[in-house]
Every structure is written in C-alpha cells, then in structure tokens.
Length: 602
Image 1 (cartoon, helix red, strand yellow):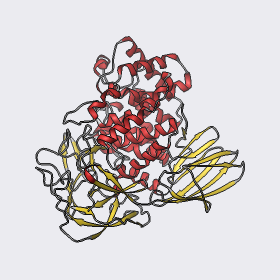
Image 2 (image 1 turned 135 degrees about the horizontal axis):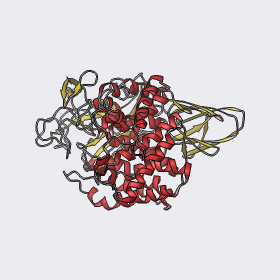
Image 3 (image 1 turned 90 degrees about the horizontal axis):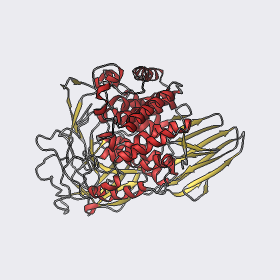
Image 4 (image 1 turned 90 degrees about the vertical axis):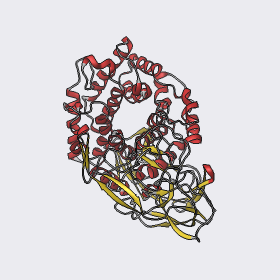
C-alpha cells in the first residue's frame, strides 16, 4: 500500500531557513537535555536512578535525526553513547526496558513500543548493523510474553498499540516471519478502538480519559495506515472520518485539536498540549507517505508553520505545555486554571511546565518534518513539502532554494545519473501557477528528467490572504499555510527555582509573559495586505517576523472570562466599537507568543 518512501539523513539535508531552525534547536533545549535535565542525564536507561520509561526514548527519537541532519560529530557521539548503554542492558531473552524482571507484569509496555520505534530511527540514521538484531529480540520477547499471557496491554500501551507498528513494519520488511503478523494481531486485539470513543469527542468533559487524551489522538490518526498491510486489511481512510469529527467538535485555526490535557471543545481559550503537535505532525507525515493523499501534506504544513513555532521560545530553550488560540497572557493561575485537567503553569514558557513529556518529545517535530521534504517510489522522486532542502543520492542531486512559506517562489536544480520522473506537490491554495515563466495548472507537476543532464526548474504561485470562518461568529486571517494573529506586546518575568530536585536557571528557567499592549480588537476592514520582510536568523522571530498582514481593526468591549483577569472571554461581551479604526500588522501565529487569533469582524 505504501506510496512514498523516506530518504535517510545521509541523503537529505536542510538548507536556508530550515537549517537555521534546526541549528537553533540544537543550540537550545533539545541539544542539551542530556547535560541539564536529570530524567535524561541520569536516566535508568543508561544505568542512573531517574526516570526509566518514556523520556529518554522520546528525546532520542528527535535528537538522533537532528544530530545526523546537521552532521554534528558531537551530537552523533552523544546519541551513540545512549544507544550503546541501552543495548548493553538488554537481557538475554530480549527485554530491554529498565525494570526488574519481577516487575515486568506491572511495567507499562508503552516504553517497549517507543524504544523499538526509536531504535529504527537510529538504524536509519546510523546504519549500525547491531540494531536490527536488537529490535528483533525486543519484539520477539514482547510477542512471547503477550502470547503466553505473561503480560498484557494496559494504560498507555493499550492506548498506543499502533506505535509498535513502526518497528514491526521495519522488521517484517527484513525477515517476513509469521510471528510478527501474530504480534500485530495481538496488539490490535488488546488495544483501544478509537472509533468506539467518538461519542466522547463531541462533548468534552473536565475529566481525564485515555480515549480523549490529545496526544493519544494525535498518534492514533496514523494507526490504520501503519497497520493495515501487515494485518491484511483494506485501507479505508478511517483517519479522514476521525479527523473530520475531531475538527468539527474540537478544531483550532492552525489544524490542531484542543486538548489540555484531553479534548476541550471549540473555545479559543482552551489549550493544546505540545506533545500532540509533534505527534500529529508525525502522523500526517506517515499518512502522506502511506497513502500519497495530498491533504495530509497540506495539513502537515499548517501544523509545522504555525502550531509548532508558536509554543516554543525564539531560542528554543523553553516551551509551553499548552498553547491557546487567543492567549493574552502567560502567567500562573493563582487558583483554578482555565484548563480542563492541566495545572496552572501549563501555558508558561519553561523547562518542564506541567509534565516533562513535552520537554523530551517536542524535539522530534522539526527533524522529522525536514525528512519529509523529498520522498521517492521506484524511479520517481517527489518534492512533498517544498522547504529549502538538498537531496543527494547515488542517482539524484536536487537542490531546492526557497523561502516558502514566507514567499512563494522555488528554484529546483536537478542532476540525475539515470532518468527519473520528478514531481512537485503544489498546494491547493496556489493561484497563478507558473513553471519556467509559463502558466501551469494542477496540484502535482511532473517532469521527465533525462539521464546525465542538469535541469533548472523555476516555479512560482500567488497566495491570497483571506478570512476564515470560525465558531462563535469569529474569524481568522489565513494566507496559504500561514495563519495570522494580532500580536500582543509583553514583558517577561524570569523565574529561577528548584522543584523536586530539578533546577530551573537561565536559559532553561521559566518565564511568565505579561501583556503591555491592547488585545481587545475586532477586524473592521475587508482588505488584507501582505507585507514581506525577509527571513532573519530566527525564522519565526517574535520581533522580526518574515511576513505580516496589514489590516484595520477597532477596539471592542471584549471583556474577561468570568473569574479571570488574564484570560479573555470565550466570546466578546460586546461587539460594538469603542474606538476608531487602527491599522494593525498581524504576525504569523507562530511568531506571536501572545496573540488574538479568533476575532469578530464588525
């Protein structure tokens, strides 16, 4: 069934603004967690006494491709140090997780599924020939224990059973042994069926539930795509059915579903957990690869260019646990937080706001996105997500120069040893498409490239800014894959302290963002003018955004949510203007750390 295949980190490299973004990440929290955070630095996975479950595998899942994409010898060596330690502790029967033998029955085997996936990532980056045997022994042991009833799925392992299929598919391609099919069937039979949870998604409650947990849902969307082949099932695009329901009842302007910590409805003042951004992106990458359906690549862009940069600081040393569409302040709640089940610090920018899962997991998002720029099938190569990148294999050398999504022109320089078909996915919102100066049409361009020749392809298109409809008679401004917000100026309050033995100190301390400009606006003009400013050293800069939209707005009596003075009302108390029209520059959502995104139009 699989339509497209991924290239390795040895073949694909980021360029331009995308490389800058990965370099910022490497210099920030992701690239330094093993030096400063006890749950990674002193983890039981490497013989320490700290957390021995999901955090090291989560971190490695992003740190490894980041290291190899940047060709960082230091980071590659540090990744190998962790993998070597993990492999060295593998038991003779294949068990690899850090727990006592007598505790296996009560150890949530979500960690088995996760470390198996992470080991496939390491192999694909490093080519370390030990790893397939390590994965084989892990999964064979997992199968034997599940088959015998020595263990069973519960809690997170039950909710995330499909995550194991990354490693199962990897191994089955190599050995084609029937026990892997049996393992796949056991996992599905013991795992949650999210189709049965749909009624719970339509009326979110202030109640924690695995079936409405937003990270589980972000992961779940790829479940049919990654499992149907080995299970011998016909693909039905169940992900689209589930996506449409989630969007209808819990959708946000930037392609997320609200979830702080579980599904939270359509309110612009409910948050979304950062882990779910990373996992939803990964699901869309795999959905596009398995199905070739262009909608998943376009949805991936929306998440990557908006939701991901919005919830991390410019230097990527701090992050939020929860981001909000209409987020007028990020300060501690003195009493009951606005979130359904999360704590009062979840929207602060910090080292470990609320829970530390996002601290470890968010760093997979940019590297895996970078690996989605080009894909292949046989002698066909596709530019799947047109971001600045270079592809170099034995047969192809392709360089893409672009500042997309901030600008909409593309230069491909292609050299091939043997003839290939080269395709370019064109977004559905592109207008006035041209190829080498000539008008063109279609959402996928195709070029038959001759062996031994060097070809230059110039593509451009226009994108018109527009107002999108949102619930509660509110609107959002969008231009292509970018969503725009009213930016709110703020002062920062730095919080350095120690909690549960974990130190927060600059640059990985916590920050409150305190608003110092007005936010109570309504759109008052039909016109939207795009202003392109060029990409700085910080691509999603909160001070120098690469593109803005100029429009008119008037202040209204918006008001605060009942019981709060740092949360705007879910819907405006009044839509009557209380000022004359002002000219506003809207920032990309990903650049505006405090923002108003869903506004009325008067």
